[in-house]
Image 1 (cartoon, one colour):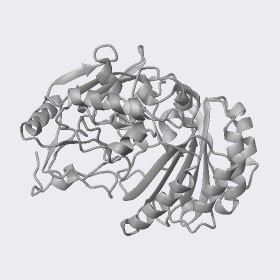
Image 2 (tube, one colour):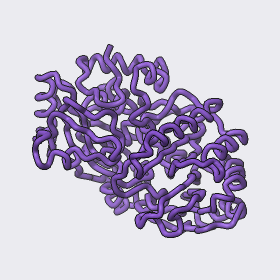
Image 3 (cartoon, helix red, strand yellow):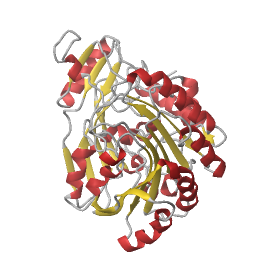
Image 4 (tube, helix red, strand yellow):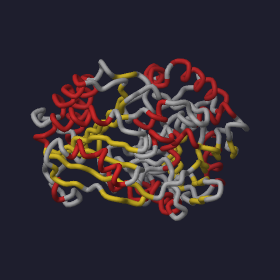
Length: 443
């Protein structure tokens, strides 16, 4: 238990996004459920808000005056290959899960970055760029949640035992307690064929128009996204990308290599590639495809989900972040959704945004002094897509400056879903103890 004057306080409060630091009244480094329960009761007795830190990728608010519970030391992973079930503790990262599932020839519905927390990823939806269109959201495959609620009690929650709370947890993020363990289904996947095609920025128009027409017909076992990259000339950046503007077409397929190559041929023919990294990979290595930063960085981000992405939207994207735009955003990604992501969930949950056909994400990083400029460019980028955007957004896509008011959250979740979340919040956290988040208020 650390106070702001203690030597290790800043280390205990460290976040992955250096632009969103947290400065609580007290930081608790939990090593088990007993610690979590004690910290929650301590906060409740003093009417102090509770903030939860696992990896610090998605931070909302500085947690001033709060009790921060750091669960990163709670990271045990168990995999049952017979039942195809994984159990992880609250602070586990994907990089701790993937070697264990791989050992059994299994794969979770995981995301792009190995450093992201597994629990937060599931609680906010979890749209896998590899398995999502085949299996749906990661939240759709959660079987049980172990959570310390506002009264300091540990509960094991399933769709049968407490259906309302279970529904709300999956999509409601951290609004209902501190999740200490999660159980979810994993799937028989050992390897994939994937990587990236890198095109010089001067070919952005022909590549993006051609990719848009091609990607909509891909089978659900095959996925692709495209990213605009403006990367600094730094040692951590691959040498061929340092100080350049490039278009990165990401590609993954669970189909045999020969069949996947035939599918990919039209994209390879669009323009000369600067680099082609597509090869056979173990599933545990899939994070290497997406170039997410492996260490903490300062960044500003914003996202939206789109109903459609017609040819006019291609031109709008090129105007904002193309080679002649003057944009300074380092990363802008467009990802098609659909498939099982648009279908009904395997288990009932509160994840919104299933009607979306596309996901758009942008960020600017590495330069805290440029944060206002990045915000301005991101606002303009999303504004340009207003004709095709929808209000409902998967919670994992929300930044620290999205969904910060009840009115915004009502749009993000949809009125019916939001009203149900509010009612469940009132039942399980009537005093809004867990409010350092995209907060669903209980009144």
